[in-house]
Length: 231
Length: 182
Image 1: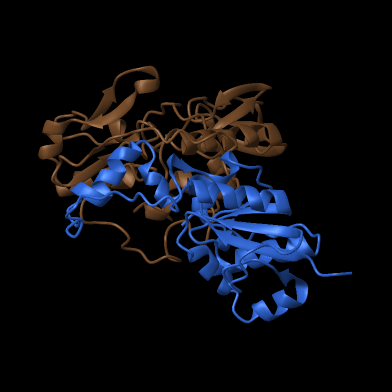
Image 2: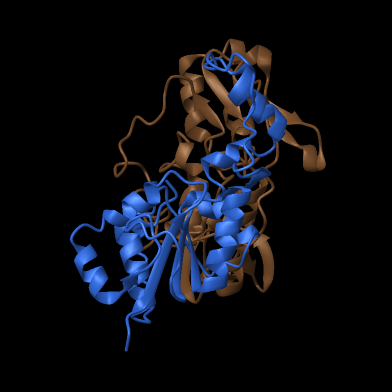
């Protein structure tokens, strides 16, 4: 077992094994740091920036930064929470997030974060950008309208030869996460199930599945995201 | 002191938000003790008859009439509230955003699989009909909006909290279970 070190988050004394990522170390100490792209157990990517904290006064993504002894971390402060809310708002306006008609509504991480930050309306104008829906796989639908390009599916949905079902296409503003059409044809039930599960929004849906949990019983209907971690 | 005056309207919406307003059930009796209702689909008053304290807007703007009514409300209401997903972000009508209007009209009146009776291939052309806009606009892109109440429809308890907070000049409580986008 590696060395135990001390650090603090918003003045709260915390302890963790040296080298543990801040987001996980915070969780062990009952402090919630919001994430979207992070998948516990997989190598972090730091792509969504939701987990940004201030480490010794500098902005860092807590999913990619290991804790070290004596670290001073600022998490639940106005400046940081405002950045996070802004990231959520930017995601809402850059895609087409029609929550009332989405199968993932109520169990969507992005929506849950918008609830957590009480996003009444995004401060940015909606783009209503034109996006495609790929229904070519017999088992899943890849809806670009809802994709936040967190790369979770690229990292987590791998076939037994180690190849990813999803990949990038284009660059910059045209960047998209797409499904490999050929591999999509031979995706099995378990992989499809996992793909829908791993997607933090409703961009990957299993066909013939949706609206199967009544309103009131969905993941974030009654309890805010992060409440399972917070003391 | 006279009671605050409320007016409500539905633009490009489905009246679901107004239905939700009625879901405050018997509290509607308390509500009429607190406020006076002016133009609203609920009482069927067609025109504003006095200056309004609180205007509540359901639905976004998809045609010229929606814009006219919204501007009429803005001019006459001290406080204007966007009420529901359609007013806030265009909602389901905004699914047409990004598709040219010509294509939408053709699909609806000429080429759609359910179009059968339009044998003469007539498009809506009565001068009385409002003009369809190039896309559906959220209300705050057309006029200044003061407050937003999300939901599809906003939960009755959420509406109740908001209206009572406004007329009693208190901060609004936002219980987690009633603040939803669907």
